[in-house]
Image 1: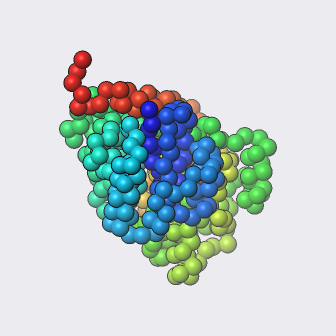
Image 2: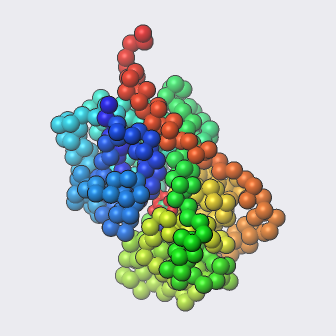
Image 3: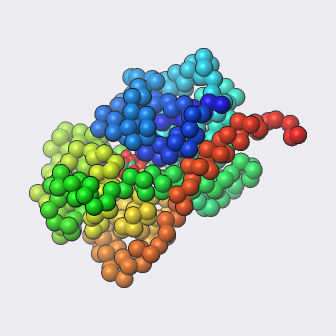
Length: 365
Ligand code: UDP
């Protein structure tokens, strides 16, 4: 049995690493090359156990959305026509996942969707459209939570195809969360001397591409009363240099960090401020408060469990104040992650192998 496990971006590599491990020799990892910046790719491939994996479709990074999906759909179709896997696993809501799910579906290969059923109901997010496309063609929907499964069922997905597995980010985070010496070294390397600091990431188009909004976010971060560490995504870096966005002296800009270093900082800081999807999940595993600088979220579970608050840039300060209430922080330390129990990857691997054995259109025995 061969299972193509497809990824193209940093968060997909992080979350599919445990799935590749759980599949063992059946896994055939395919890296499309959607993220092409080495800082977002290289160390993550190493952690996922596929250090030397070369992009299957070099040259697709940095092209527009239509070109990217079109090129990947064509490229993956040719790849799998020549060498057909028994099933294809895609993760999340990227252009890579969209194109791979379509290519597999049109070739009649079972499609397994990890992190199925997320909905922001914001059609301005390219990811939301990708989610809808993937849900339409997937055969096995691996939802992280009951609520995600509920969205799929309400949209008419057959109940037998929907499974609540949890999200493999839980085991990925637990496996790599550094302690003790490694953590202290990561802090020292990042120049963190005050343990009371804020870790921030900003990369979503709504924040990273708008110099005024980005400038406002940076100035609000500086008002939090603590040093701020900001590992900078290439997209955000580009806006800062192109428009000369002012970075306040309180905010220390770093290059993107490898996952262990990022989690070392996340596990040590007082507060996180981010617009990332994956970080909303990780804070629930490490028990930290997070201000989510976005218009909408497809991960309300983190909010409901008390870990996160959604904020516009001018609300960062007020949201931080509410999250940092000592009684609230004490509650967070005792609250389990709503995104899974750390065994999602095993369930996803088992469901995938079962789908290979009994294709959806096979006659019942
Ligand atoms: N991350 C990292 N280093 C960094 C910033 C983020 O390893 O410098 C990790 C973070 O822990 C999370 C993932 O990258 O697991 C999130 O990816 P990103 O924010 O790019 O994408 P999203 O989750 O929003 O799709």
